[in-house]
Length: 188
Image 1 (cartoon, rainbow, N blue to C red):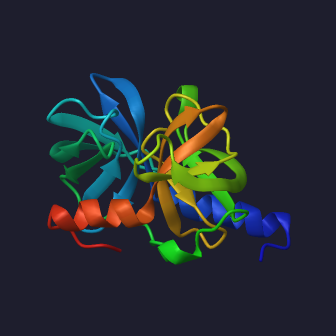
Image 2: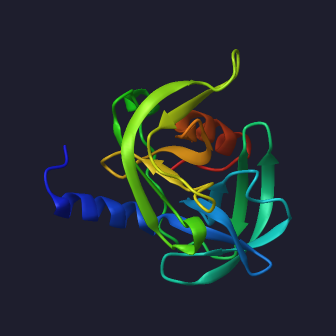
């Protein structure tokens, strides 16, 4: 459990290191999560073209190409020219529960590496019969899409996607893992 402001600052640093900015035509499109072996997971609605760039936390801009895009799951997988970025740690999906403290990191409205914190409000479909989403009371804005939703250890519990009814929605990590594996990519 987090006890001090210093713990929270350390958590922010961990999650910021694995968060990249996705760029197309010199315009920020959203965020992404650094994945093993030079891959990035982001939202499908963030990446609509075969070639984009990502900017790492240290400011390097790397060329990336779209490998797989699933509009229904709102997930996309990018491949980078470099494989030396820090990679995400994945949370145990069963540990994500209503009331869990979570943080979101992204690049909203031109603010690089912005952090928002809150709790998991619900894990439920948006529409009857649909796939479950993590509903969290973290503040998201354009530019957060594709970035990580992490637990207090810094492990990724989901990929932020949108805002509905004032709540942030994230693709649960179990779906992200299934997506990555179906593309033949290792899970951190």
